[in-house]
Image (spheres, protein in one colour):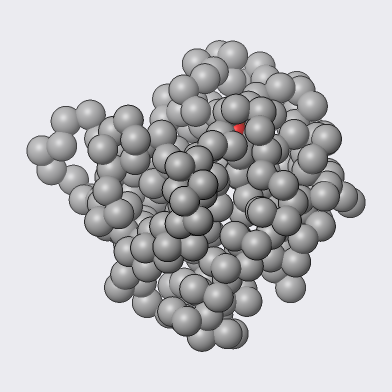
Length: 249
Ligand code: PGA
């Protein structure tokens, strides 16, 4: 059985002081033994939030990571650094990174590979644009993104991988994919994982849905057989995040 994972993606919100205040406010209500809960926070808030979460089962994650361990990469953070800080999760290839920071399928793959090498769980984001969906190209896009992202990942490390299906048109728009659209895409991603790693491993990899998840729609989304939780943006930055974390329990 896959344990459901609910990951909050704070994006570029909450400086350290505000982050700790918010975490102190919600940490008890999101500390749920039935689910893995992760807060992906800005780099500068990682340590303070980690400290604030001590004594709970809630974990922290970063929102991006470079694909080298060190070197002349001004402004970047390496997987070795996150490893030393004992940060267990990192988002890789979020559509905002792909669109606004020119990340490609190739660098997404390199980031995921290097993160895995350091024992981090990469939450690899994939998803189509509105135009691609309209042109019935969703499966082609997902096939390409998933294939590239998983290149050279060894089967023995694959179980640490998390895939987040995030249709770009649903991110921050208030327009959520219908439950059927989300489940269909996640089920399709599962077939790609079976092709790549075989059935046994594919059944262990968690696939999240992301894109305007709220306390209202979360329970239905999370009830689907191939949706193993959510990557939650806006709704993870308000006190009712616990309702998403507990949705459907
Ligand atoms: P949203 O963002 O929940 O605000 O739509 C999701 C994401 O970008 O991961």
